Image (cartoon, rainbow, N blue to C red; front, side):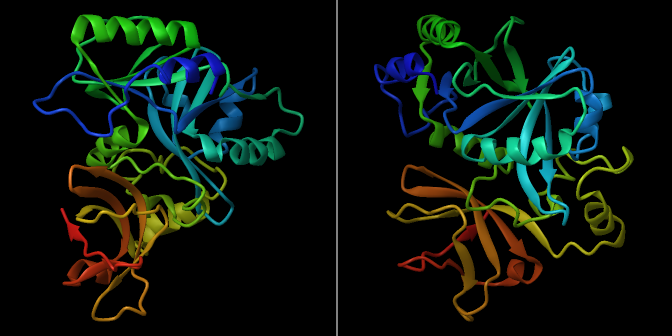
Length: 305
């Protein structure tokens, strides 16, 4: 993040709890960053690399998608925004450089430029605030009550200050915002969970983040085979856990009746009050297990929502 934006955030009291009664919320999404893809061949290039149909994107309307390796495993999930002939990929900051390097390998002689805008652009989320159309403001995956504001540090600071003054908005931290994403079932991947799951295991087909008619892209053969042959044996679920410990992404899950069996993985976690919200990828047989638990020090029990 830009030093000016970090300095501004240090002056704010970022809450680690969601306010009650549907109050207005703003959040600095410091866990996310922007990778810009531009050039006259950008659309064709992305069409051959991502799960979503680039040709159907509408300017300034975000879409969820994924970037896979040749084996169909998801390297990163992302939100993509088309801005005329430029595309902004919003993904977790700790995967941005790895994704940029992998994509760069396929550019070859195409007119495509990949630019890390982590230092230039700030990403802000809003919740429970009705906003009028303005530059740099986008609906958050077509959710009418949530928005993204992406701008330089000076514009971002003005935006946040105005919302705090006009709407008495509460400033929350990025981890607390992830709790809202868990409720919405949005599966952000981080370094601990990259390249472990085909997109359907993350419910990306149900989230309309996969096109099965667009043609070839990296990993498409495996993704299509999973879809048409029905061979997906894992899926994503929301859950919760009561614990004082931090639940780490990538933590494995077992059934207390058979602690040796690895039947799932934690994708995301966010603590709220005395409970931690979770997104999990579980094997089919885990759904009938009566005693799901984390494979952490305390073997904390998990309840599916």
